[in-house]
Length: 134
Image (cartoon, rainbow, N blue to C red; front, side, top):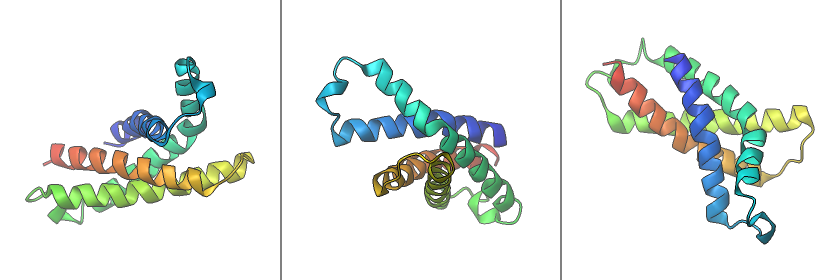
């Protein structure tokens, strides 16, 4: 479960971040530089996504043994909510920590985007992983 959560976060979180940037509206200078844009998004998000996947794995591993109401009977809503909350918090914390330690520019925009992508990625991953284990 741990490896699949980490890998899922490494894939989903940067892709969701890219999607959020596209929805927000990309500046005109990015036109024609799609590959560079994707590489840039992965460059600035892969470390927080890796750390978030590890944190979410620990949360799921800790909760699973003593919280049977997530899996028996399987409750999609609870699993989805658990993943959304823990994913958002993990991604926001890891993004803030990474940006502080690496002395990269910091803004509330990064934390908001991290929380949204963490919530979406965590919700989907948690719902799928806890369902598979029943």
